[in-house]
Picture 1 (cartoon, rainbow, N blue to C red):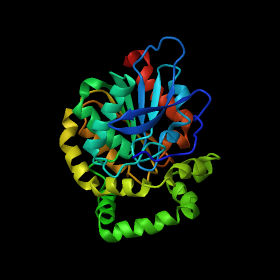
Picture 2: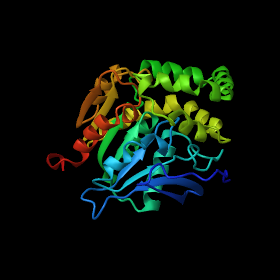
Picture 3: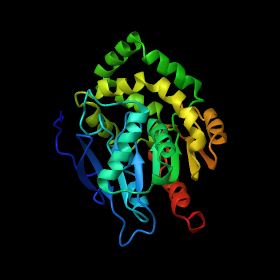
Length: 295
């Protein structure tokens, strides 16, 4: 069933807010259109576990200089509909995003995914390689992060779920502290960032949806490892050198298991380089996706 949400302003004056029904769920996305006739396929942005289209607010305009850009709120998070019947596995979400692409008329896209969204993007590219031209993965969840595997096993227990529910109830108090852990330099947190993320996390049903994702995470990541050899399109891996969520040590291992990947590390940056150093991130991203030598 549809969860009513308050009116939401587009993330910037250059973006339009839209809604589309996918698999019976009402899904919110923002679109930033390129001027004139775009010279490249559209770009689809897939946020991380606690994010939504808001995560890409500093990147949409730069990308729209070259292509139409779509940033969706995945089902169950952001301002999209929540449903307890949703298949929250990585495979289920990858299939959902493919259906979203069909619904908005995207045949082929460059896909940018971060964290959990990066794992989702990898599986999508493996399942439907003809739909993905290039792939950009920002600190993606991957099979070689030992810390991530320990955390996921713990959170999948009844005790772990209970502890997370208690922390969730305190979220308005600790939001700033949690966000600071995602940055290499917390002084780079832009005004309005905490409030922007908190607005979507407070919607009923969000916690249960996120825990459903976490509970299938270990099996999902194991299954993802078997799919990596099927990813043959050009891939750019981007990491923050101080990422405490998905450790940079896993980056080279992931790169070695992808057929055509390069790695870029931003020193002193945390888990959200697209927010922490947006200008540098946008230059790297647009260079990879749109430079003449890469077409």
